[in-house]
Length: 67
Image (tube, rainbow, N blue to C red):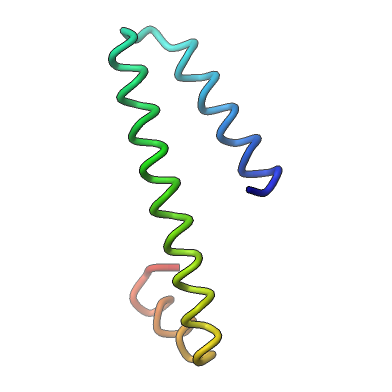
């Protein structure tokens, strides 16, 4: 994980911990963020593999509003 992403995740984690939420709400929020991060990471991997196949993939993904 890049340092920038790690820093962002740490700031998000701190914000969740400092928020006026119950422990259950904090746990649920963090679970959602972890899921979104995993999805984002998976999409990045998929994008890299598709880009290796054809440079036209980037244009298609942009047209679809995915990047």
